[in-house]
Amino acid sequence: MIRLILNILWLVFGGWLSGLLWLLGGAILALTVVGLPWTFAAWRIASYSFWPFGREIVWQDAHPVAGCLGLVLNIVWFVVAGWYIALSHLVIAVAEFVSIIGIPFALKDLELAKLAVAPVGRTIREKV
Picture 1: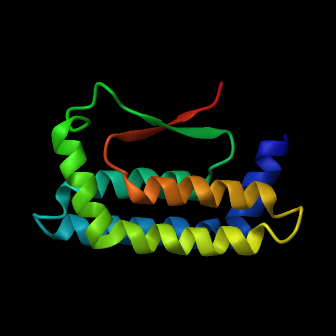
Picture 2: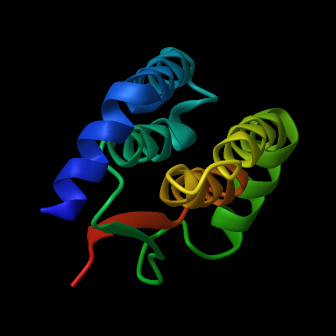
């Protein structure tokens, strides 16, 4: 029940915007041949941005791009887009940490910042 309340509050107070921006970013990446490797990672992050509580981010060891190719894709992602997206999530998290009520939301923004740094080779699953 608490996860549902937190997810609804998250969605109402900015999760919808974050999710839509990640969806838009993924769509723009899909328009280019060069951006295709990052498209599905952006859409996974969008799904997490819409409804993060009760879910967790994990590495996909068996994923075909989790090895050296994934490392190269994550380095390119970090240089081109990841650092400033992560920075925006960090700035929002600092603002949320100001109040006790905002701490759970700040922790989710920190997870999104970590995910924005290196999204390739990660997946989202339900917490057990």
